[in-house]
Image (cartoon, rainbow, N blue to C red):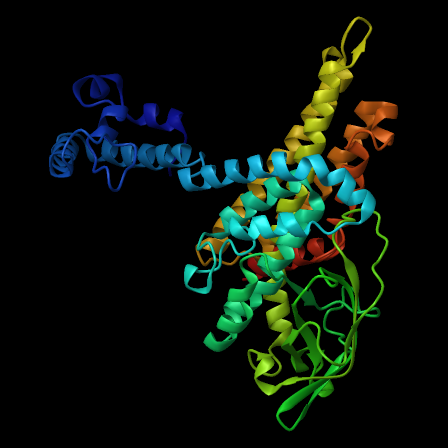
Length: 459
């Protein structure tokens, strides 16, 4: 088994190390194309021959230990994000600090949709991060999406959720289940920021029971006719299209649900009032009301009866997005708390000198970093085509609860100043709360995690 560095030195005695190339030099003798830590000064053929010759001269047990060390070294090196991701992260951070953070309080107070900022984000590729370039997207991966979501949400959580819904809930299912014609029609126009989409699954009476859809659709000639009400729809008032889930065969229960692409506005579809929410107030939330709403037959997404599967797979990816939003809120709250504590003088010194404050900051930092690593892991599993349902649920659970905890502790550190709107601590607290509710409550995440754990054990 590959252990840590202690295992390495335990398997190779000092005389072996003295007589042969040391581990760092061993890496420099390897092909640079395969091992980034190899030097670029020597040709790849020469490095390969050096390594092969060196390996032939030492015992097999030593070779195995060095292979273990090499793997561990690769893991240690890969802790740093790839350069492309670091650049994206910095770009999003700069944008959030300059364009979003200064107006976030005003957007929140006025319930104002940040249309001009959304347009700029579209131009930066942030509204279609993992959509292939041939459809107008940025062509990056889900880890890139997660990093961007965190930084944008750090500046403004409302803008973050607008971005999340367009990327993962609207574009996501069309990208995976749509035909080429549907992708051209329903993806490409929604990548630039000129248009955004929404996702209509929840209903007034079903909540977490997504399989109990009372909205229905029946085929009438060349058209589907939809009737029913969808609730809690983010981006409802600004969206130009929506992915809607409706029952097409009640006898099949959740296997009788289908997904549809509906343009907005369209005859037979009306909007409910904008909800007056606790947090994320710059994003609109409203009901979608379908009354004999006709859409073309070809607007069916996937096959009839595939809707529940589409919804569940979409939510797996969406949960990574919301976890990333929660990370951004949590980081913003921690930043606020540290900044205040460094400047607040009590008993003749900054309150960061007080152990009680230090303990709070330590707990906040641990919760944040733990959730961030879970979220990155879920993103990378998705990028590599591996099952990630459990990890997505874990990341959302950990990140959303961390955001609530950290924003709560931030207010406690600020005291009275944390309770007024002059500083953003109270807004972070209000924004954090929804992350434990939408795209699956914390209770649902625990059910998903437990089911996956038991499935793994029983398997």
